[in-house]
Amino acid sequence: MDVSGDWFVIVNPNAGRRKGEKDWLEIAALLNEAGIRFTNIFTEHPNHAVKLARKYIEAGYRKIIVVGGDGTLNEVLNGVYTQKKYPPQEITLAMISVGTGNDWGRSFNIPMGYREAIQVITRCNTKLQDVGRVQYLQNDLPKQRHFINMAGLGFDAMVANRTNKVKQEGKGGPFSYLISLLASLIYYQSIKCSIVVDGQKSNADVFSMSVAICRFNGGGMMQAPDAIPDDGLFDVTIITRVSRLLVIRSVKKLYDGTFLRMKQVQTFRGAKVEIESDPALYLETDGESLGHTPMQFEVIPLGIRVVVGN
Image (tube, rainbow, N blue to C red; front, side, top):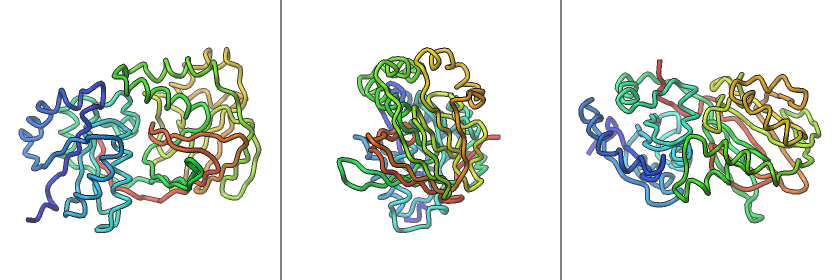
């Protein structure tokens, strides 16, 4: 059976405090109403979406709708990049957000309303965007992960880890990232790092760092306000040693992007980023907690096709 024209829908039932499960019948009815032919499967455990995307692409599907959050989208992307049937650029990803962040969707005008998001999918206006690949260590073993939005290091990775634990306890919400940010301030210390961006080396006491394809993370924080998703370059933002009080006073600046003007912030742009540190600097990609330094990032230009809003 030829399914290449059909959509495969991967539903994360736990996304958005189980909104994926609670709202699925409503979403499915809207997909049917819009005349979208689809097959759907629910994820059952972390990284299940990686396996589902890989399996069903190899069965012939080339269009995937993610019903979940940015973490589910990240898993699907990694399924696209570990399947062997089609070049990744021949796979199209679309998003119906039921997560708390919707950070990737903000950059592409994907509406939060289900009906409106499905209208975007029916129009199927697509573009190619860059993909990030990072190599890192986890339990002293080399690992690799692809990401579609942003990687966060240091304090940002600690906040993501705390936020994920809150979500696993079923207490996630639109302010969970901000609450985790304030709670993490008590413990976090800056870490001395060596950073190489396209061959140019610098040293910094890193409080927090982002390696970005798109502009938003943390539920609407504009951590890379100048990022262009299809320019073949990362936007690298480094926040150096800062006082806890200054972080609290500057939270608003994270949401509107004006924090880039602070003297504690350095920015770079490049296609390759290498980071070493002592002690280890930890990593998250698209909100998913991973391993630690040493790390090597590289851009895959125009690496995935995505459905975008107006």
